Length: 117
Image 1 (tube, rainbow, N blue to C red):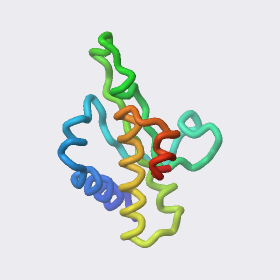
Image 2: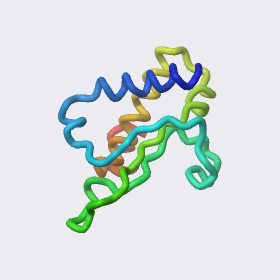
Image 3: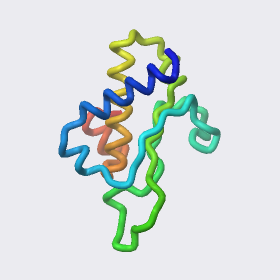
């Protein structure tokens, strides 16, 4: 799947979010990159996505004039899963939701408890 088609999957995932989630997002961009850098994935785990920034939960009164946080969805690790297009779309949606949860301040432990790991 080329980059344009993969980005369309990510866009559909964002478009399907409930309004309350979209309304909660603040100073964050969602981007697609082919694969994580060594800095993003030092253990070489082939991350599917990553949240880079300060979660809404952790922002204090001093938080202002900051560059946007980033949610990065990685195309090639997703494609390496060898999923059908419908299953790939569901996996992309799960990854997008997982990283948005981090933006909202939900950590990996809580996501695990909720079955979103």
